[in-house]
Length: 437
Image 1 (spheres, rainbow, N blue to C red):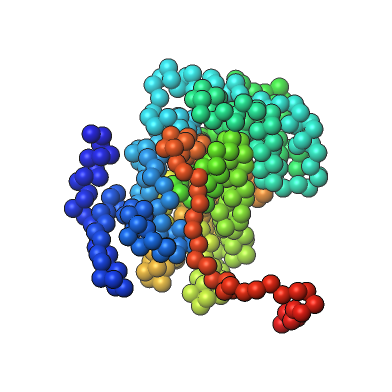
Image 2: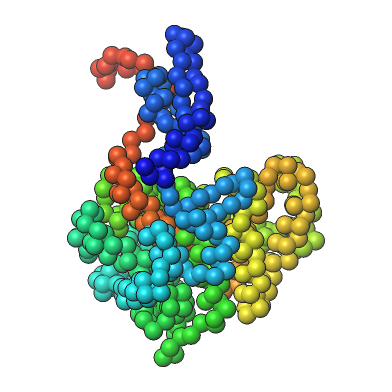
């Protein structure tokens, strides 16, 4: 008996009983890991569906990747607290953990690091004939989505998703090439020449080199900035069944190749409701304008005339654990770059909001986006690169979900609907139709 079977048996004592008032029939449904089996429910009440348009109360998957307890403010990757990983680990090690389920040994990590670093180059035709074919003012995120989809045509073997070695190679390629594609999109958007990867540099240092190198033989970023980016990448690597991970799993359930599925996930992240939150925070802080204007802004929000960006979360009903980590990271960055002039406004905003029962009673606490934009801006990244910076590390989480989905032999995603349209009616010839009101 597996540990999972043991948990299921132990949980049978927890159950709910549903009564069909039309017939008086009852069914007992066990609660296992906080969920009930929808298949059992649908057999008892065929043709009756849970109406949950945004999946806010629906578990669409069983996953062993990320544990998120929003009530207690807990985030763990494969059981490891995010606080410990952010303090002691690095992004590539965390990526290995997400993909493979365990932290690597020293030899495993060295091989993993070598494989990633030596797959950072992109095909010249991707750069010259594809990326350079975009309009001069193309958004870097739009370029990234398109380039990821195009990669599937450069690696046709990627469609063989059931051969472990082939799939593993595509996973390595995607994690490795994301920074190269991202930096290339930025360089094109500002009219600067493409910078090739430097395999002598670690993952984050290499990305910063591809972003900022001009004419120097070698670009060595400040170690404090490299470490800050590493921490940010760890914090953004995965976050359970969010919109983009759900897109990855949905497209993956159709057995699309990993490049196409990753492009779909990246497209979901492109939406401002998902990947644009830290940009919205900076715009809000800029509009507030000064430290002294914070109390008046808070009053406006409480009156319903505005929104406190960077506070609250769909899942967290407590302080986002990533926000506490990122706040410490901000201090290290500002020691190098100088303090972001918006920081005082942000600190005052957090202080006032957390002392106000209006926000505390609504469980509106700072989330990861509240400080991340300040850090990115201080490091020199423009606003339209913020979501790209989100996508670079999130690809490891997406791919972990993709790999898990295939291992579960999950059925193709096919939710049901509650029909609210017109009843049955007969066709009317065009000349006999009444005009629309």
